Structure formats: C-alpha cells, structure tokens
Length: 386
Image (cartoon, rainbow, N blue to C red; front, side):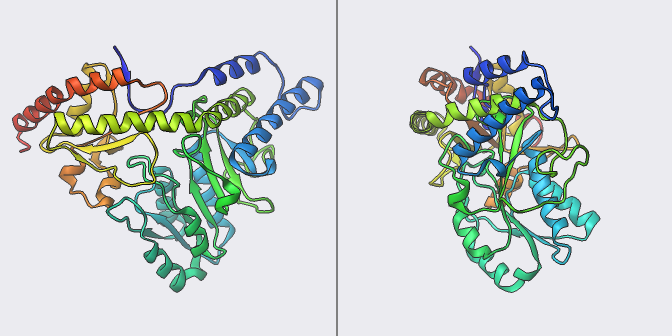
C-alpha cells in the first residue's frame, strides 16, 4: 500500500476544500468586474477573506492574497526593504526556508543589503540573546526581522512574541506556512507586522496563499498592474482557490485539537518504534513546543537519497534533510545550523505525519525500516563513501 509521510511538503486536499473548489469553479466572473457575475464572485472572495481573517486573528483588510507562500515571503522581505531606503540590514534566522533566504541573498547581491543570521541553539530555537545584541547595537539599520513561526525540517516552534518585544518597533515578519492549521496561531496576539500562510499546507489547493499585513502599512509591490489587494499585489484574484483555501482552513482549525493529539501520538509511536528497530538512529527534532508530526532523523552510514529511493520502492513517501539547488545536492542548511556535520546532515530524513495517516501505516514503515537502512548502508560502502 502507498504510505504518504510528506505532509510538511504538501498536505492532501481535504473534502471541504474540494467541494468549495468545485462549486466556485462553476461560477463565471472576474472579481474586479462591476457587472452582477463579477460582484457575486467578489462577494465570495470577500467572504473567504473575512473567514480567514477570523481564523488567524486579523482584520479582513490585513489579508492580501498571493499565488504562493514564496511570493508572499518575497513580497514581505523585498517590500519592507524597499520601503526603508535608509536601512539596509535584514535579520533572519539561520534556518529559514529558502523562500526567505534566497530573496535576502538577491537583495544582498543586487540592492546592497546586509544579512545577519540569528544562530540556532541545540534545541532548534533561535538565540534570543544574539538578537537582543543585534537590535541594541544596530537597530537603526534594520529594515525587517524575519523569523519563521515553526521550522519546516525540525518542527520547532520559535518564540515569535519575544522577537516582537525585542524588535521594539522594527517590522517583524514570520513565515507561518507550516504552523497555520496545525498549532495555535494568532496574528494580533503575536503582534507581528506581517505573516505568511499557504493553502496547500492546511488541506487546501496548490497555488494560493496570503500575506497578512497590518492595517495602515504599505509595501513596495513586486507586481504592478490592476492594483488589486491594497495595490500591493496586482493580478486577477483566483476566486476558486481562495474560497477553497478558506474552507480548508476552517475545517483544519475546527479540528485542530483533535488532529494535534492524533498526529502527536502517531509521531511518538513512530519515534519509539524507530529507536527499537534502528538502534543507532539519532532524532534531531527534539524541541517542545513543536509541530505535532515532524520527525527528523539521522541514520549513520547512509545517504539520504538512497534512503528515499529505497523507501519509495516500498511505497513510502518521505523527504530528505537536504535541499537541491540547480541540480547540485547539498546538505540541509537547517541541520548544519543545528550543529550537525555535513555527513550527518546528508544522512537524514524528514518524516512528516498528517491527519490521513494511521497506526497501521506506521507499523508498516517500521517493519521495512531496518532493511531499508541496511541496504542504504551497503550502497554507501559500495559507493566508496565510507
């Protein structure tokens, strides 16, 4: 049987979202048109915006729809930087997603930005003392601080409210793509200036996300055109995806406590079984609080690509603790920031459990895991890597 354990990459679209998507796709009309069909679609979009704002603890006018979390992150990072020409420093954590790190790198190379990386503790949490020192010594130069709400490879939840306090008025953005719908997240309560959420991580469709931006603030846009979304994100609104996003999020939040308990129990069951069947495994995802379903593990004497291919032959979908850039494999920057060697980082997997998984599936994974690891180690030795 096929076993999907890559929910952190994308979650299966849920029935609520499918129904909403199908119904909305049958309607014709551009939400920017003034005729009746257009106004009806606009109402559907605004209803969805209002529902999402309630779910995330924001005002409807603070929800700016985008085509992806990557777009929302780029809009936040570049927008805040361009809005403050007298400030050229961007502060991020060392283990941000590449949707944050890469636009910062682009600004460094092309716009004269300076990036400061906040180190990570052994527990997978940012070093707040380092941040305090940076703000105290260079606060007047900082255009934006961006720290993800939870890490996508480790699952560790970051102290965002404390970051806001330390920032003391400096704009704070948080990439909450992995958190929204899985753990408690409230935009207003955290006090952040901006946050990113995405539909496909919460059981919605691909190709729609949102930047939550405090009222009264402007960002320099990346896209120019029709002036939609507070003139910050031009483009025809994807009404079917937006309505489905709202439906998926509403379903996820309504079942958040139940899902968290179920997924956490499966995660703990998996870790316990994994330690028994592969005794020398090292679990990297040890922090608390954390996302309920992320397990990051190192299997000494292996290589992650081999592990993934062997799991795939068993019908098991997971992901590596490494990223690929321009087709060139490299160790996970997240695990290196955590303190792992490049060798160990490249021998790691991320298993991410979701609402559709069962104990029977976990048992099947644990059943084949010793053989998968043994074969991966044999391949490692044969390949001359040991």
